[in-house]
Length: 439
Image 1 (cartoon, rainbow, N blue to C red):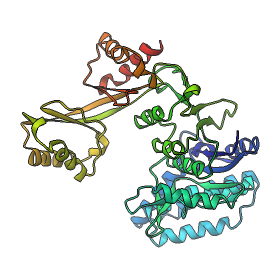
Image 2 (image 1 turned 120 degrees about the vertical axis):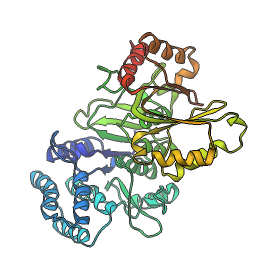
Image 3 (image 1 turned 45 degrees about the vertical axis):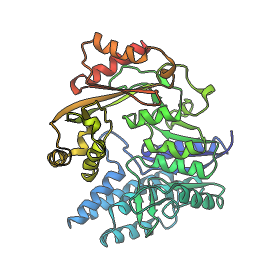
Image 4 (image 1 turned 180 degrees about the vertical axis):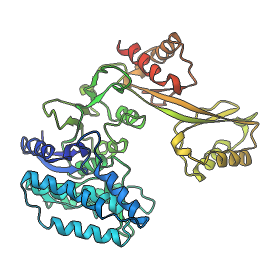
């Protein structure tokens, strides 16, 4: 195996003991040349993540609440790690002074949040003896915060070529038009790692976290679910989107562009093989389904209008309404005279009444109804499209257990079936579907 890019999550950089595990992992293989790190995560259940404290710091600064104590607490997280490791980090105090000064000058929320990864990478580079490479001027976004893949790949490739070994901060880059810091959504260090893997033309991207790969279902719902040893990119994308949170859903794309396998590994159990994400059919598991994931809290807006199918532009106008409201949808099943929009309840907040009013104005429907607390479950497996009766089995096990199906939708690629159930049935539905396929 050739060049490897590694990303370590927040739990892997939480304290000195975890950093020592990182060093052992990196030094165990000379091909592990580029390392991406997150901000320090929780050391124990009652602890705070550094990123959360940084968001709190920004909030206090904006409200003119004294934040010196919080700043010193954040600084202490890093200095305690450095002291425990017994290393010297050049100009570390000066970097904190610069950040404190920028906070006082009204630095942006993105800038302040990004400093967790920035400081983490500087510290890890000093400990590993690697170069520190800042991603701010290498990962580029357009003015709307959308990642610019080609520009980013060109900049990263050119910079990495100058460094035999380097540590890079995850989570952030900058706007192309003004150079100001822009961040990914939470968990975005996974995306950074994937971008670095693509730019370095890596043979594999190792994503190190605190679990030994992915499981076929949420262990909080299904007891002792089987591990997923190997899975395809497209299956992972479906599971990640529907709540399987081991890997950020957008981390798939850069690696997939260059056909780079992703290996999800456990920093605390480096001997475990973890989960391999690949396009190589010969490498993949042979199960009918690869996994089950879901989210329990959706709101469904159902629109009814006689002869809807004959009204040109009806769906476009409906989608324009939720676009204007700044809301995204998850699924839109339709009938001849009906259309339903499944929207995460958290997205709607206080926007629902305005959306209903706009839909009535734009569409003149016969009726609009709203249902809350609907759960969606994705049953994912590339082999379902060649397996007769997979969807029937899902319906059968739910019926046998007295669970009503509120929506059933199969993706056009036929690798996933989405089932809608009442939120009260969500966990039991997940359990019986898993048992129906795995036993």
